[in-house]
Every structure is written in C-alpha cells, then in structure tokens.
Image (cartoon, rainbow, N blue to C red; front, top):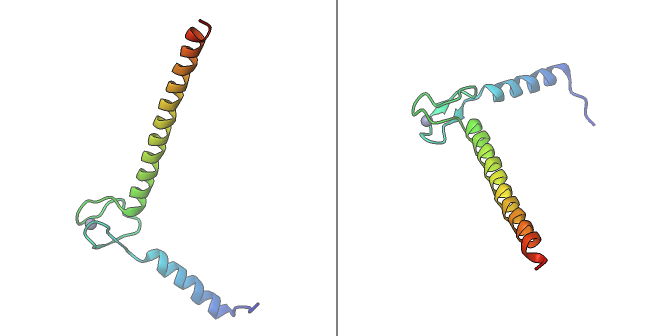
Length: 87
Ligand SMILES: [Zn+2]
C-alpha cells in the first residue's frame, strides 16, 4: 500500500469537496441546479434526491396497501372456513 504525502492528501480532500459542490443536472429541464436545492429554480421540478425519496415512500405505501388487502382476503377466507367449514 502506498502512503499518500501531505500534498496528495490535501489534493484528494479538495477533489472530494469540489465533487460535493458540483451542481447537478435537472432531470426535467437539464439546467444545472445546486445540490442542496430541493426544487429546480428554472422549472420548479423536484430535485432528483427528493424524487427518489418520494418514490420510495410511494412504494412503501403501495406495499403496505397490498399486504393489507392480502391480509383482509386471508382473514375473510379464515372466517368463511370457520363459519362454513363445520357444516
Ligand atoms: Zn428544471
């Protein structure tokens, strides 16, 4: 393993900092927007990070709803079996 000199280390830190400051491209209009911006100042579109988080939330709600429906159907079948199973 190669040890970095002090200068190389500084260079690396600077690069990481530059990367973090670099603007991101708006998915909707293609304009460069700040990484910290929640919405695009040009078209008002939500910044990509926010969008992904919202999509994740939507997926969770969809998943929970799906499980809820399956649970209700299963519950109904069990009740049905209890009521009509012993005839
Ligand atoms: Zn935009």
